[in-house]
Length: 637
Image (cartoon, rainbow, N blue to C red):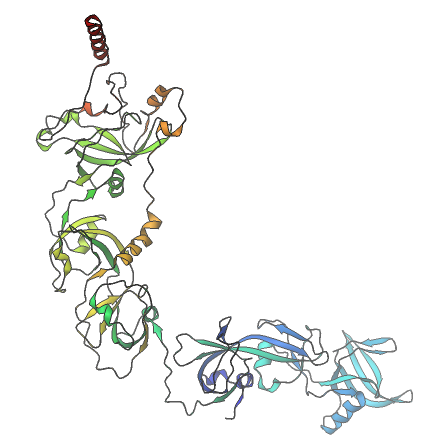
């Protein structure tokens, strides 16, 4: 095939013959280093091979033969087109009749005029078909007898053969849609007429988008048919040529098979390292891989080591088969207690530090001592002295195991502000061993565990060397199971979302492996990647902890009646489906100094706890002692 312009090749191309392989005979380079405009290829080099897979009609340019004007039509244009029998136009009727006789076409014939014709009291509009029946003498002039159809009636006109204009022979046929008109080979480059358009005769110039495959191009290349480049069809001599199309691992995952498939790494994405495993160093250009498909299950657990100065971070697969034993959780604040609490699951803790209740904020904010046992009930709100609602944690104080029968009357609900900076340790007695899947199904995260037996399928399981692990959260993300061709025994899982390698299907690989080797179910992560994963899920779901209320002295606004604020503080917005909390007995409770607690004294000291007895005094007695001391000093002076 001789080289031809790309637009001419596309117009003569039969879509049923695709795909076709083209070689660029004369390339085009547009505006320096710009290779694409609006997603279309605009630079092709001489010698490039293009495998055309599909052509799509984008628009049609209509050009008026008489005026030279153009108009753009969309592929869904509703008008119909009728062809003119020839592309030759005639300047008068005598030339048209002579051409008819030469073509051996008998009269009558239809013709149209590009201009309107005025004769006596009749006007023939432009593009109106006229039927030429015969040539005869009329009023001493040689005329063409024509018939004009005007609706239901017909008008006979005698036009002199010297009538000048722009005439076209027209043969009525089946009207064609725009798509039919541009796809019919017989109408290519022939003038057509359309009653919907303002021109009598026009040429249709379709413009296509060519979708093709090129060497080492990852995506489908889109080429406009108007690109000024010459091409040659070399399909017959290019049957042995294989077009290499790179893929991303995410695209391999989306294809869903067939697996296993051999691949070769073309490019490794730039960026910080995400895993600390040794196989990461093997992911280099030219390395060959076997991809076995999507890993199962899809969920993973993020974990951090405990008991070391610098924690290490791990991603544990849902297929991990090591044995885990629960450890008591630690909660640095009451807000952490509230976050870990789930209705229907009892949560009991032990206080690890003393806390003096803030009676100036609310008389029900209870003091705690080291060793106090609490059971979390839920959350509520209480009114403070500033007239604002404060989020509180409602707990049930528990007596010691040995005193449960003696001190039942001492058990009661207490309120802790969620910003309470205490320290709590979960009270638990669970010696069972769990696998990861059962543990996640029965308990909420975060969870403290100890790996007591390693995963037998992972000989280098690092989790058994730690005193404890904190299982932070569960994530769900597709992974691909991959092994190295150079080290068949090394099998691991790659997340395409964060490690999207560019690969190409490899040729000349050894025989297909029987199956994937054992997979490493634990991967150590870098600290930066670990916190990136935590941020992705935590920022959207978890609200920030509440801010503590401002003190009255810092606000600069003093209430005129602080006693009313104290009364309002006893109005607790009660728990759902819980009885109302008892109102504080403000009249019977002794008054304390600003640094002491007014609630802790209602509970007797627990046995076995080293507790500092709060300083308490009776107001009446204090006044009496003061008067006696003052009187004694006055007498001594």
